[in-house]
Image (cartoon, rainbow, N blue to C red; front, side):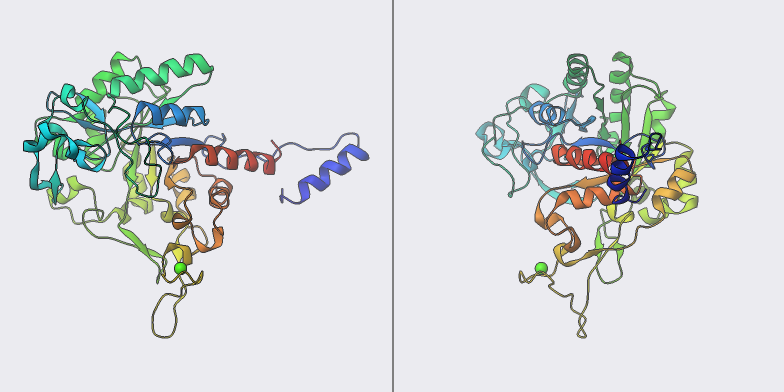
Length: 395
Ligand SMILES: [Ca+2]
C-alpha cells in the first residue's frame, strides 16, 4: 500500500466500515521477516570497535547480531580485530616494552604496512593493550580503557545476553586475511569451527553467520563440516561518481585468494547471475558493499568537474545522489541467497546529497527494497528507522 494512503484508510475503517481489510503489507525480504540489524564491530560509532563494551552497547541498542572480525595471536587464539596490524586499533605504539616488535614494510595481502602485528604477540601480551577509536571523528575519551576480546568471550557474551534478554543475539564472525593467516601456520578456519562446535552452534538454525571476502575460506569451513549460514562479502575500491559504477583497485579489487592464485576476475563478477549461482554452491547469502544495490552519481560541469552541490568546497559523496536500485536484491533472492549490505553510518560525510544529512532516509531506502540485513556502526539509528518502516507497512 502507498504509505500516505494507510493513515487515510485507518481513519475510514475506524469511522465507517465495520470489516475493513487493514492487514499489514509484507516485508519483501527473502524470509518475509524484517531486516536484520548487525552491530558492525559492535556499536563502533560510539565506543572503540571490537571490544566487549562495544558489543554490549550494540545489544543494548537493540541489535540482532554482533559482528567480530577475527585474527589470530602468536599462540593461536582467535581475537577480535579488523586488522592484524595492532597499531590501527590499539595503543601498542605507546607501550615501550613492545617497541622492538615493530615491523617495517611488512606485507599483508600484498600491501606494505608498518606497525605491530598480532601474530608476534601472545594473548597474554595482547591483554596488556587498550583498544582505541579507529576514526578521528568519533569519541576518543574511551581510548585505552577496554581490552581486546577473544572470540570465545564474544560467544559467551551473546549466550549470556540472549538468556538475560529473552531474545536471540546472533554472532556474525568474519575470517580476516584468511590466506595470510594460513601462510603463517595460524589458519583461522579450524579454530572458528572448533569454537562453534564446542558452543553447540554448528547448524543452519544456530544464531551464527560466518562471513569472508575470500571464497576459499568459506569453502574450507564447509569442508571442515561447518553447517552454519555463510556469507560471501563483495567489495570494491570506491565510487565512480561520473558513471555511477564502482572502481576497482588493489587490494579491494578481488579477494586475496584469487589474487594469489592468479585469478584476475574482479569482485564485480560475483553480482552477476552466474556469479550468484556460483556463490550459492557454498554460501547462503551475500554481503555486498551497499552501492552495489543503490549506486551513487554526481553531476558534472562542462569542464568535467564534479559539482559541489552543497557548497562546502569539496566534491565528494555528500554531493552525489542515489540512483535507481540495481536488480541485485531481486537477482540474489531469485538465486536463493539473502542480502546483507554494509556499512551504514550516521555521519554527514557518509551520506549522499539526497539524504539531506539524515541517516534514517538512507535506511528507509534499503528497507523498502527488501534488504535482508545490514551492518551498522550506529544500531540505535538503524533500529529506529526500522520501527518507522514497520509503521509505514502497517505492522
Ligand atoms: Ca561538497
